[in-house]
Amino acid sequence: MTTTNNQYRAIPQLQVLLETAAANALCREYSRQETVTALRLCLNSIRKRIGQDGNYQLPDFHSAEFFNDIRKEILRQRERSLQPVINATGIILHTNLGRAPIATVTIDAIRDTALGYSNLEFNLATGKRGSRFMHIERILQQITGAEAAVVVNNCAAAVLVSLNTLAKGREVIVSRGELIEIGGGFRMPDVIAATGAILREVGTTNKTRLADFERAINENTGVILSNHCSNYSIVGFTECPDLQDLVALAHKHNLYMVQDLGSGALLDLSVYGIKNERSAQQILKDGIDLVMFSGDKLLGGPQAGIIVGRSAPIEAIKKNPLMRALRIDKLSLAALEATLNLYLAPELAMQQVPILKMLSEDPAAIKKRSQTLARQLNKLDSITARVENDVSYVGGGSAPMNELPTWVIRIASAKHSSEEISKLLRLRKPAVIGRIASDKFVLDLRTVFPEQVSSLREAFASLA
Ligand SMILES: *Cc1c(COP(=O)(O)O)cnc(C)c1O
Image (cartoon, rainbow, N blue to C red; front, side, top):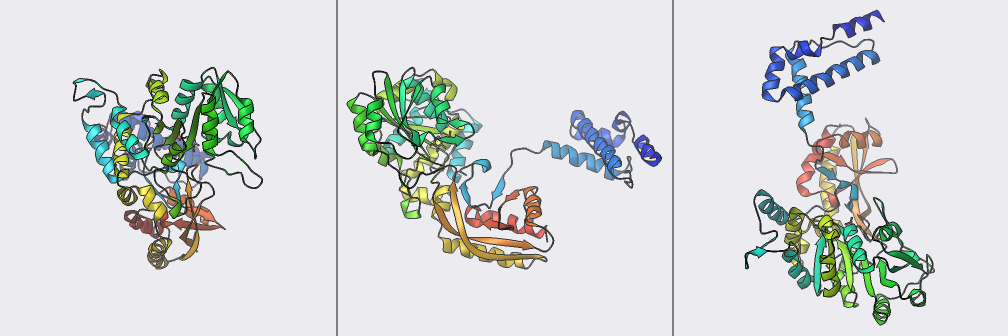
């Protein structure tokens, strides 16, 4: 007890340490504020250690080592909180890991726009004020065949502004099988309430017929809304009307037919095993008035909410006062335009959009990459790596039932449990995020960029 008390007493006052030459040097190199914060944190952690460990040895408070620790702490405080990670989960659109990585050409567009001024809202031809939507509308028309297009901050905002424009104070008819929750608090009944529209549920969880919609229509109906069930699927004894029939019904009664598509593929991805994801173009062909989708799901661009469809509702949306609050920022706009440019030639999009490359990578190629890495990992002491077949997921609330065949590396360590491996890799820079399955740590290289593999190898070398 007394030794402990003596140790506490032997810790110098922060003010005393601040006056040393070493502290002064740190104040000059960084800032006084940062030096004080780092000193305080280090002294606090020393006090904590004394309390926990009776044999704890105090550092020499005047040594170079002590001030080196203070310097490290200052640098740690300066690190960015938002940092890159290696996604070895095989979940392509991983919501917690930032969804879609974007193409390299997109970065050039962001840099050019970010570092200087741009014609964001300035029409260079007329010299008058322009609209930020003008940069994106023509290319969206060209790719999707829509009459008109507009973009906002994300797909949730697209749903919000669309329903607020077309159905405020009026009823929105939705099938009970499609009252989706996307996550992050996006629940369809709450969103509809927030738009000022009135939700009119029809049908049942598993079966909704055209007649259910027809019966619900009254003089206060504004919109029929269909929602893509992006993160679940109702199978078995089910029924829902064809979109074409719903469109015909809506138009017969002078209503708008709108779909929240969510993922928003712009290419037919069924050849890659992505089933049940109709492209925006296919949906527009059914005669729908509006379709909304995300920029950073299957499109593989930046966060954005894209609305395409008929001119009249889109012009009305552009005039909605909410647009100012929901508008897309210039960097996302630059990235979105550059991403969409790739879609003008679908082969270019397949080659350059990271999401599409990952979706379409041949399992045999993933196997080969995995075997190469596994051979290297097996050379490390205490680590055994085996390549086995498994499945990757599209994720991000896209194509919930789709599993893509893949090959994974299953790791066993003589030193660490799979939970420990997971934690140690998570705390590295860059962090490595894998999966744990049947008590083994698993890496799926489908979502790992080739240039990240050496970091992965180093991460495991640090565990061996
Ligand atoms: C993902 C999703 C949204 C939300 O999109 P954000 O771009 O994340 O706002 C809305 N609706 C559906 C059907 C979705 O899948």
